[in-house]
Image: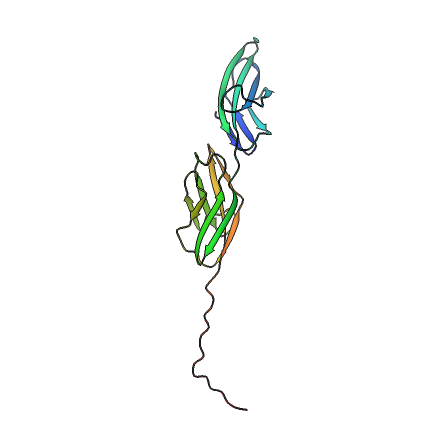
Length: 189
């Protein structure tokens, strides 16, 4: 199974190999064997969580079975990218129109990004749209009624979604227009 990336970590799992004593998992920076920062793990399980990785870094991994006979058998190898959610969420409100911007996460050039807007943190009950890959801003194509709204950017990396922290914006109602007094009569004391 491909590695599932996470923030500063990755989860690896693989199919068991018969007659195995244990597995050795090697991880290094880059997209090929031999990169810097080699980490090695020994496990009897068929999965492992690798922690302490750098954000926005490609890693190469290799799983090898050490058989009861003493021989080695390759199990799986591949690459993964550690991720961070979108950050620096900013909103600009002009009347009932809203523009959103953010710092896109690493990998956003290849992965889906969604903007969700709701009436509570994490909700998408007001608006949700796929804003495309590599995007760093979005003008919401609707007008908002007065109120407080919460929004976030969800980024998909492989099989996993990484939502940003929630941000909020306030849409104010129109200022009341004073009504001119008509037929005003004054009396003297």
